[in-house]
Image (tube, rainbow, N blue to C red):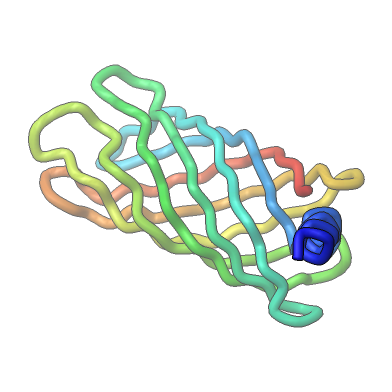
Length: 155
């Protein structure tokens, strides 16, 4: 039995990357604004995109973003995205998900977010992106908007 199972597992381990769609990691930064004020925001994300045929894809993402002002903490995000491949090197997508609280005072809670973005491959597995997100009001924290850019690698 071992003579059968070990070669099968080894074959699957080697073949899996070729069969997989795309994992990705990225660094990003931008601006978030609400109530007349704005702040810088920066972070990292990791995700996985699944092909839905030749022209469409869906994906999942986890992220950590920090607003560059006092009394803020890293906000952890859990989101999904659905998009289209607008060419060999371009992806356009809509996304939505939940972000944990990003501030360190009572009444600050997590927020749901919806947005849209575009990615452009620049060389091999490297891509750049631009993305807009609207974070919906929850608790005492007002709704906010964020615009960001990033650079990432697919593998």
